[in-house]
Image (tube, rainbow, N blue to C red; front, side):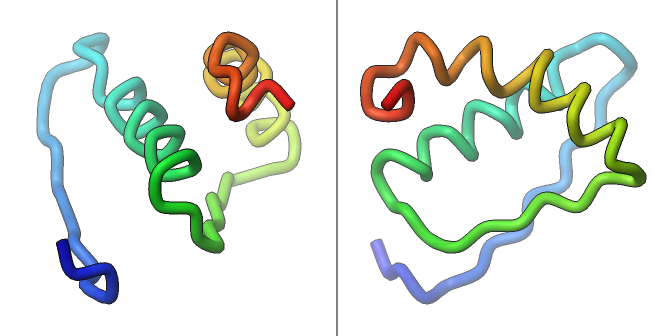
Length: 68
């Protein structure tokens, strides 16, 4: 796969269907298999801390490559 291509995917679905989980899992996969500089912009520092604690850290602690 060509690495210098930027892809945009738009997911439209009703509430509580797993859109955020899809994004989180995709980002964690890339962190392992195609690491690059990434930035996630949150509306506030509190939102960033909450999202990281609730959505990212629980998954990361069960992935050996990211647990370190």
